[in-house]
Length: 240
Ligand SMILES: [Zn+2]
Image (cartoon, rainbow, N blue to C red; front, side, top):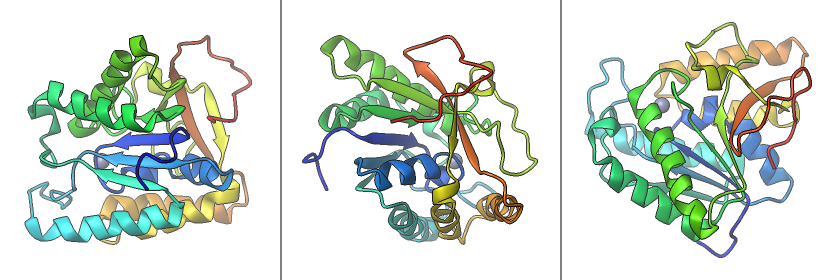
């Protein structure tokens, strides 16, 4: 699918698999509600090994894993950018990255965008650079009236699992708690696609334990554009 179904929900992440442990549920929920869902991935994940060293043999594996994840989540479109090495996004020309994201957003006009916040959940510099470029692209689209209506950053404060990330204040201050229990099996399937990724398998194990407990599964988000007062103690429950 190209530009023929504008609008909907889009996510911009750094690596194949990032969508699995961040916003898989929100994407699947929006898709099941009949909304267009898209994913932009900046790198091909070729350094996704324990040494974080580029391995050309990993490129095709991670791309095929991404395709399987996208199928599990029912995404309408997945785009991989060219020329951004895994592990070195922050060292590339940030204006070029912002321009490419602007063009991608401008052609598709999503109503709602999800990306990484100031610490990129894990502190990975690729995540930080990707989130920063995506948000800068939105600011540059706004004067033309082409910005998404809302921008959210991933705020993983509701689990699953006991792992606690070193989050920035904006990422800790979740404004939205989305109950993804109804589509949790799709998030499981998206994570299962990434057999080459040890970290992803850890997230998958946490998710399975949470599902077995029978409690609701949540994804957390902070709306960063437009900025609004946090609605605690009640969270908003829908992104789109
Ligand atoms: Zn990543």
